[in-house]
Image 1 (cartoon, one colour):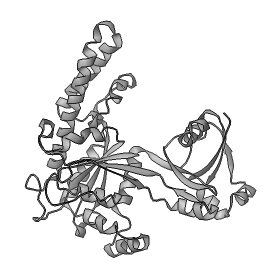
Image 2 (cartoon, rainbow, N blue to C red):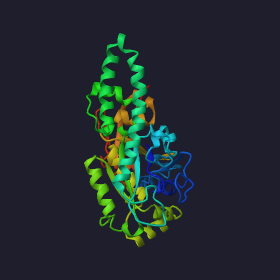
Image 3 (spheres, rainbow, N blue to C red):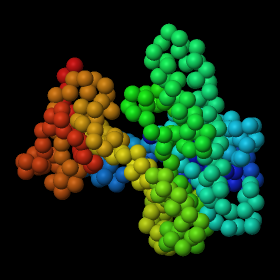
Image 4 (cartoon, rainbow, N blue to C red):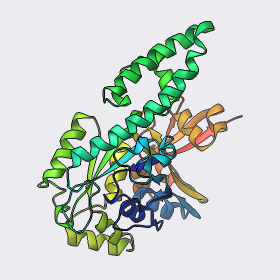
Length: 364
């Protein structure tokens, strides 16, 4: 799973990236501090894996991961060469979703690139720059398809679809809201348009607003209203607090969060929001050599889940032994779980559930 982090300069993007990835990205109180795209890979915390590792005395524990790409802050006019961010938009074209960091706190000591705090204006600025970048991509594709139209009926159809999409973008709308049937969508999918990606809004608030999850923060209320209208996810965090958390071990982190009156870190909230937005879940594998989490889409069937481990597993899928991880832990061993009849044999039509511990049988 890969997420691109965007936002205006100085909204806390790099502080957040630095905190959740511990990658040491440079952070400072001036615009365009990030001049190279930063990339960091973060393991997704999963207590189920810890318990399975103990149960099997596994040599290795492998968590599912998220890769974050942090690019330079975008500003109004980025598509025309203003600032630095548009140079790096290509770095987030391959991401699964976008995390848009929005400043939702007042602090005269921290410069805002536009001189005032207005999260909806900030969101609109970023959206327009992403639209302009997509229009540039679209123009290049249209030019290429136009030369193929005389002798290719499908090229004519593609050209018509892309012309409609272009008009949609030029009206200030995002590609994600463009309505297209399955046949037409195939022409759009491969373009990897930035505005076709789902968005998670990260409301960066002051420390005093995190205990109530920004419930009384007027800026956060506006972002939540906007996100609801645009089928997006929102979570509230304080980038400065995340920075403090990053240096703590698990026990210290738990105590620190308790003192602040919150149950989970910004990273925990982000992971949950990402899984909801992208319709994801995890199944597990466990044994003496390794206990591991695998991320799949909700609704994935057993052979395709097996294919996440190795393509041969999917090609030669025979069956899967399945047990819910909690039932396995309660029994204390797979052998006892089998004695109680809790281990099921499932075939090709089985839809995998979150928390399933699976062993695949295959023959190639």
